[in-house]
Image (cartoon, rainbow, N blue to C red; front, side, top):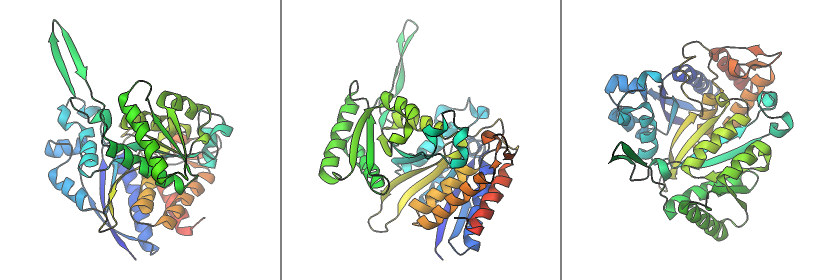
Length: 370
């Protein structure tokens, strides 16, 4: 039985509650002889600021570097609204992404059959939905320089954010998208704003060249980011893999997430390059949802996105695709049996707590209801 090093960062708000359910699944994997996990816990976000005066400590960054995978739950909350900008809770997450070289963010949008009516869209629009958004994560406007606010005098200021992409950054994220598409339905939609942005012109040029050179067998289409947002709401099942930049990916993936009924349902993976010597890659897995401080400590949080994040780690970091499939099936089984947390409640369902949902998924996982 293989052993893997997991570094757990529960973070703030509902983070510790949903992370506790991941630990149950990890223990079940060991009991079933599927995988063994050596786990360590650290601090990130507001709790790290309270303890160390920084959003993540140097010691915890070193643990993250040494781990086979990092699982992070959530950061932030109104308690830390006025801390120094460089120490804000989100800075811990951004540093993890940057220092670990996690340039590829994979955000699936999957609509479980039992939850098709939970979406704000009609059942026929979302039932069976399974798309993957591949977002470039370490470049673009969030990291470009200069980034500043200038005082122009006479009560006027100027804010500057810079959108910057190099060829290699576009090419490597596009390659991730094409590789994924080959394992799915063999279609990639590349999205940018080449009609008004020079970075979009280069993005399209690089994607087209890579497709022609290495991935001509994959269907490729291009859509402007604003039009794609509209199409996601009109008929999302037309898409398979969507690849886009940091800013547009941030927005479009949240749109796609809500098609499924709740942000509490969706995991994500942030991946770095594969080490050619070890075959391993740095990776961080986290739910799409935030820290939800208004419900923290009340047992109301939906743990499915956090558990699904472990499932993505099983698939992309540990090479345990069959175990990941088993976990996905266990989640679907719990939902099909009518169990719901408060965010996805529906008529005729039984509303359960965070821990009860986790227990139900573990039970289905152990019974291998596949």
